[in-house]
Image 1 (cartoon, rainbow, N blue to C red):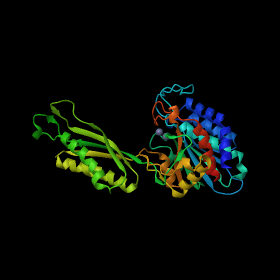
Image 2: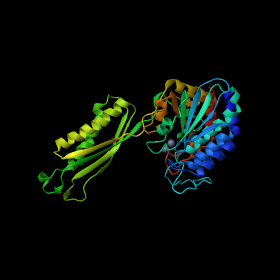
Image 3: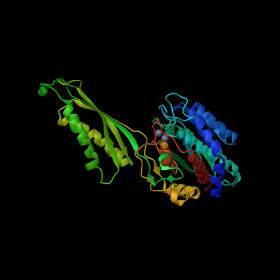
Image 4: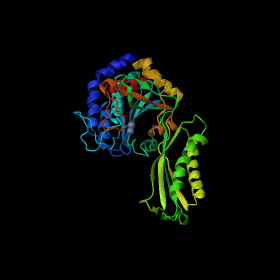
Amino acid sequence: MPAELLTQAETLKDWLVKTRRDLHRRPELSLKEKNTAAKCADEFEKLGFRVRRNLWGEGFIADLDAPKGKGRVAIRADMDALPIQELNDLDYKSEIPGVAHMCGHDTHMTCALGAAKLLVGQKDKLTRGVRFLFQPSEETPPGGAKGMIEKGCLDGVDEVYGLHNHPKLEVGKVSTRIGPFSAAADTFRITLMGRGGHASTPHENLDPIPAAAALVLELQTLISRRLKPGTPAVLSVTQITGGTTHNVMPDNVFIQGTVRTFDEPTRKLLEEGIGQMANATVAAHRLKTMKYEFERGYDSIVNHAGAVESVRRSAAAIVGDSNVSIDQPAMTGGEDFAYYLQHKPGAFFFLGSGNAAKGINEPWHSPRFNVDEQCLVVGSAVIAKLVTG
Ligand SMILES: [Zn+2]
Ligand SMILES: [Zn+2]
């Protein structure tokens, strides 16, 4: 039966490739996925799914009920593209200047549609219903997941799954992990405010430059001294701006950067710790004051153990045990799939889409990103297997 699913998915390959390439040619940015959503929702309707369009923005849900059995499993796909000019030389390259599917969300939608086709073929055997969640705006915080959830996309759902292509994972492989899968990705901004003046009379000014230099170094001690050894976290200062010339001390210095954490206590400790250190820097360097902002990005995806086992089992049935890993290292990138798992059990996993021999391994968001389209066949079959159990 599982091998059968893969064989059936293979017969869909031409359709899958065409569907993905059509989406690829006409990418749309976050919150502007109008034509993308309409095209996909039309496909679901043609297949006999019950579709609720514009649930939140262009986001929609498509349901197929199980004649026997109860419960419902949800599969999420994201629809948005990126503000990037595609540099691939392909006959199906993006036709929209400066916009392209360089994160491969076109493949996620296509895998979901492929799975829908496979499931319709065995509707009588379904032991639970299925819902496809097509979400807008994954790339642009605050993201579309929260809005979709608020509008009830998880009502009546028992479990929720999502996947992302992975260009560094060979096509035919699937990888996931129990627990934290992606980082919470937050931004901090600090303005140290002193009093500028002539560079020759530092005693008459309140110089923010050495204060900023000290603070940049001090901030790393939050990672090395405040966190329990072994706690994964990243704190990177990525911008420091102050002053205009060699003989003028500036009033202010601006510092910003990113924090990546995998659990709420660590996130909170760093959020507070950065503010405490900035305040202490003001006191130690006799500055006037400071301004501190900590802007929360997406929460961390935390996969549920039982759902990870379902992914492992389903994927192994399609691609074989040796091609499935549950030791995927947690990624320091962010993903708003996190919010679905705060409401329902489920898991997120990587679908191999790379092919090193063919030179298909450019990272996400590269202007030369692409996938090996065999991933559409594997992804469709794995999702169908996850649903049918
Ligand atoms: Zn992306
Ligand atoms: Zn993505």
